[in-house]
Amino acid sequence: MSKACILLIEDDPQMQRLIVDYLENFDYCIEAFDDPMDVLSIFPSSKERYDLVILDLMLPNMDGFEIGKRIKKQADIPIIISSARGDIGNKILGFEIGADDYLAKPYEPRELVLRVEALLRRHHKNPVLRYGDFYLDETTREVKVDDYPVELTKVEFDLLLYFLRHPGKVLSREQLIGAVGLPPDTRHRTVDMHISNLRYKIGDDPKKPRYIKSVWGIGYKLIEQR
Image (cartoon, rainbow, N blue to C red; front, side, top):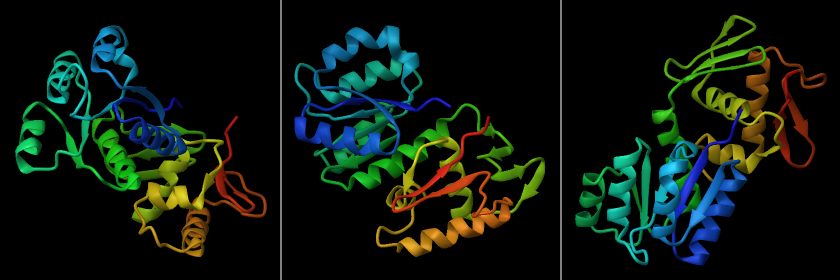
């Protein structure tokens, strides 16, 4: 399964580094630019590579609204505006040029991850995910394991979806808390409880796991299917 690739246009070096580091921690591919003119020079030939754009408004050489309009003319790609301009006028203008979401700085990076996840789900061309013994439909929230239907809670479904999107990757409890929208102060044992319930429902034995393996001191990973 390929990573979602995000185009970031942000000229503040500190903010750019923060966003890149945080999103890479959630296994996204990030390509960052500080000058919109550089983006315009490569976008026509590389637009199919990107799944989402994060766009600052106060940029050198070209206003963020203008490059946002040009990107939307060339590709049907979701755009999140990330800007210190938090007034209602700029928000309205942002949505008028085709932005799908608007985050006023400063904001918690975790909120950006949640907005990215939500937009990618809405724009995902194929909501059905098949991996090994699993069938998962994001639209109907239907899950089957080895062709048998499984009833999951919202948290269990979101955990399974996140695991299936990141096979073989060790995921910390903090990552899982952020990925499924649990409160930031959620205790680790609460995550463990949800994982235990999920394992039970998909027929996984934690002592001899077929699907979800515990990684001592860190979290969990989905065992890659051969």
